[in-house]
Image (cartoon, rainbow, N blue to C red; front, side, top):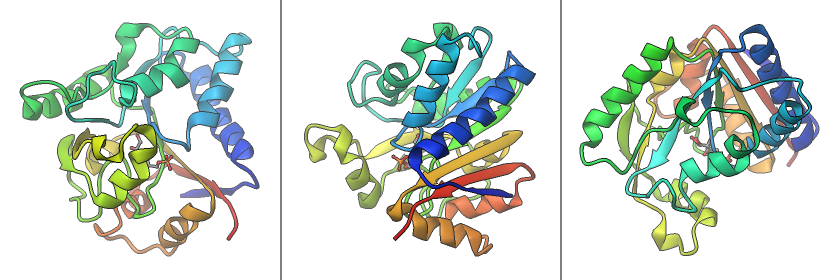
Amino acid sequence: MKWIEVNSYDEMSAVAANIFTEQLKAKPASILGLATGGSPVGMYKELVKRQQAGDITFKNVKTFNLDEYVGLDQSSPASYWTFMHENLFNHVDMKEENIQLPNGKVDDLAAECVAYDDRIAEAGGIDLQLLGIGVNGHIGFNEPGTSFTSLTNIVELTESTRTENAIYFDDPADVPTQAITMGIQSIMNAKAIVLIAFGEKKLEAIEKLKSGVVTEDFPASQLLNHPNVTIIYGGTK
Ligand code: F6R
């Protein structure tokens, strides 16, 4: 595991954008695994700038997002589909048909879970996966206690995660209670992983990860068993 300590959110974003830029230059038809949330917004801004300057292209890139809420329409302002379009896809030369998020609005959610992992495998597997981390160590929506062998699945959101995510909804009561998320094993299948975390709130989670203890009580700890993970982190108490 490679640790890169940074001094600011902007530095974290630039360092992460450099890794994605290198990936796209080395393999223009890369399969990227993407995340939503506050952590990647700056990196997406940086990638938009670089694409618009002609430094990189997303023309042949395929993306798979980690997760989506269950029960929200894609077009809902709080959906991860909307988040990704507003923060990245609408501003770069991505083809809409190359964009994939799990669909939390289908009748047969169990079939969608299996189909999502199949679609990733059919595309050739994820070359580079971006992750944020929850204060409780969650990655994707995989909360503490999730099996390390989990594939894409439906999860009940914990109150802590619903509270953290309430800022994206008009009314905290509107935060869905379930989500569809790539499992820990689906994430571990990526060839390379970059995890970004900045700020005081994340320090405890980063310290726990650094302690080297691998346990299902702290989902991100399974990343210690992956051969190619870069953690870009920073922030002070
Ligand atoms: C987002 C996701 C989550 C977030 C995590 C950190 O797609 O799967 O695991 O990465 O909750 O969120 P932020 O970046 O908002 O602190």
